Figure 1 (cartoon, rainbow, N blue to C red):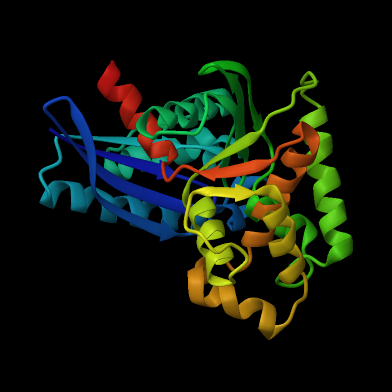
Figure 2: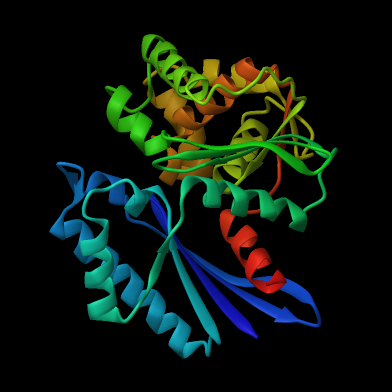
Length: 298
């Protein structure tokens, strides 16, 4: 059977096809559309322009599924539609115009699906923090012996940080301090106990980009998926000026993330400081992988 998982995020709408055969789940096709729904808000409502953009993107993906003979398509939305005031209106418009039902994931559901994705990858140890950085929120799961200890959705993501705290393309040193303090305060609001974790396990394309960037800039000479946390600080330092020299490496590695890579690094740094993290492990899986894993296992 072939399944399509459509993840409607604040920054990107992701379309991914999986084939399930002989008890094996295999991703076969993916396509991402960077639409930036978070920027189409007025009075905390998705604007008509944003709704039209959502409709055109979902219409395109629905046509893909029809042409590719997909057996079942699942549509999920995270903070993109969860954190707006006109969610019911948007869902009704999509249903009426496209006959598509969108499931709105709570922050905890999103974190849980992200954690499921670890079942599809081998990690160094069964203890750590899983981190999924989105445009409007970031999901964290603290776990030990593969069992969840704490699972929360932090109400901040890279686009939210960019629009609220960054004056130019990259945040300057003062803005970086403000961003780290803001993230730290949001974590403190959950009253999470004092934990120490060696690893942050990063899922999603953001962490793949961080790894490629560190390798491209020769901050790290090997190509393993483990990144010492000190290298995150070195990368931050090298990218902390709004100059062409700073922009150039990311333009070569992943130009679409040029304005969000530093907010991503600052989220990692804030968590590392809070939980005394020593290493980041790039998992090369996504929220969509966790969702399909859950669907198949049901």
